[in-house]
Image 1 (cartoon, one colour):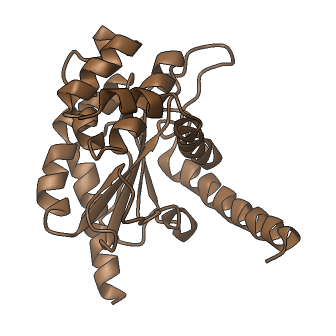
Image 2: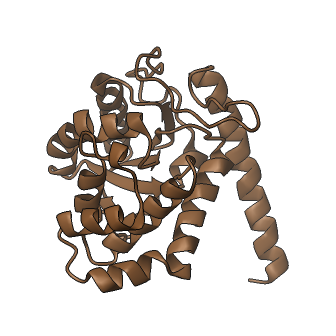
Image 3: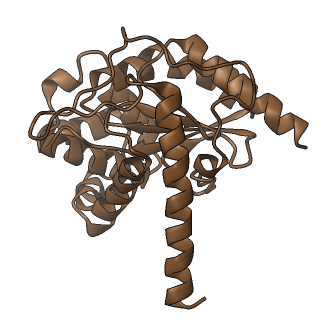
Length: 250
């Protein structure tokens, strides 16, 4: 494929995704993707905000172009669940985001037990640091932990109750890596500071911004956008509707 053809294909894909994002923004309303004024700190959607409107109708609010963002890479260390699972939940999140931590502690474990363990669901993490230098550092550190197969253990340690209040300086990130069971801490430090880590985080971050996401956490469930640490029922409804659609298409 020529560079010209590649550029045209990328442009068409961007337009298609842009159209889906515009429709998704209307679907979810003001609470979906909220940005603060220029120069202000970006804020997470409040867990106390109205829940996203997620219908049990398998087709409601689903955008096929957004579903294509699922990578389904069996070697992706920042994912869990079968690569060929019928449903993929993509999470765009920041380790300094309190509501991301709420989702990680209060909702995600039950989703893993109920849907990932039985092969229905795959969860793909996307680093989306929006709260400054420590967010960026934590994102790179999480990626580095993943290079030694300990991303989800690092994720659990970084989102433990009270963890973010301790900050994500270099010493703290190493302590979290040790807590997560990362064996080679010297390699972890090298990986976290590498160009590969920076590129991986930037790729995820740019994908989120392309979607129009400006708050964390933001999610896609087989192309259905969900914003904020919504009640567990919001996610179970979306997952079961997506699974129903996938089964019908077999």
